[in-house]
Image (cartoon, rainbow, N blue to C red; front, top):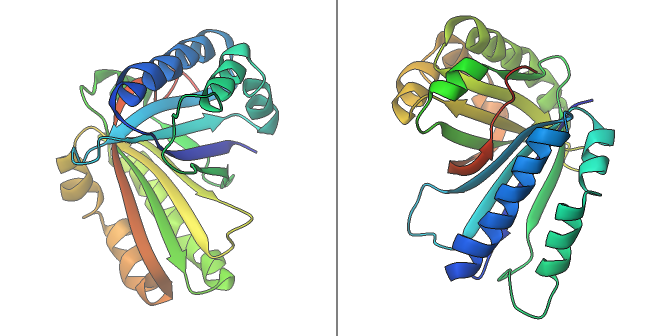
Length: 225
């Protein structure tokens, strides 16, 4: 089963974030792209909100659990974990690291050519909360129509995946990337499938949160998945 890892890293800011941490993540990304075919996405991101000068977001996708486990054992990752636990402060508070299962019926959809052509892909991770787990299951049929429309009719929708966390049975997560902010809101969000999903499931939902980020290092997709 493909895996999605979403991490929120509240650094102490300054050169720790801008130089040290991002450089280490960039080196890890380069190694993974060259040597780990099971690493499908390794995207190092910062908040689009420039008032936040401390947080790093990581969006990672793996072919399966074995690919993720192997990645965690490479020397670059081990050295980075050791550095994070060293005497100099790196994180301001505990990180949030979510290990998610990509919903297999939908998979991880990417447009490699579109990603390569996009100067600044508009990356979003969404958290959709439902009132109970049964409503999550009912919602999947509606999400299926969104995914199908995104694949078939939206050339500016570059990456799309739906994921879930077994420890959070009332939540779904989305991993999305678009050629621009305008394409997200003027094309994708206004599609009939998205509008129907919202209209037909809004009373099932308990909350919606978007993490809107900018990729500064790494890769959203390989040339082929």
